[in-house]
Length: 115
Image 1 (tube, rainbow, N blue to C red):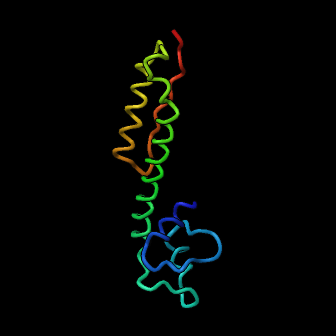
Image 2 (image 1 turned 45 degrees about the vertical axis):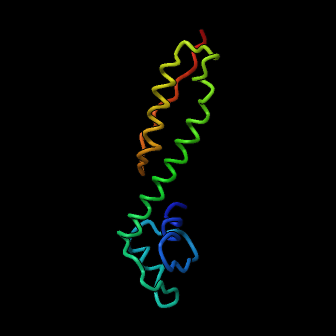
Image 3 (image 1 turned 60 degrees about the horizontal axis):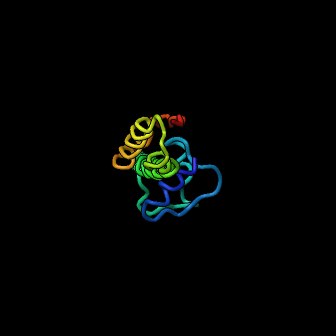
C-alpha cells in the first residue's frame, strides 16, 4: 500500500509515521495524535482523494511503459499480419495516458502474427 504513503506525502505538513500504512479512517486517525501531530491534518476523505491522484499517475506511467514495449510492432518494415490489433491495443493505452484512472481495465496485448 505504498501509494497511500505517497498520497500522504503529497499533502502539506505530513510528519511521517512508523509502522504500517493506514488502511481505513480509524487507523489513519490513530497514527496522528499528540505524540505525532500533523498540523492542519487532512481528513481521511482528502487522503483518499489524493490517493486517487497518485493511482491515476501510476496508471499513466504504466500505460506509457506498455506502449513503448510495442513500438516495434507498428513499424512498416516489421510486416505483422495483425498490425491492426496492435494499433487498437496502442490506441487503448493512449486513451489511458490521456485520461488516467485509479483502477484501469488494461487491454490485452496481442500476440504477434508474422506474415
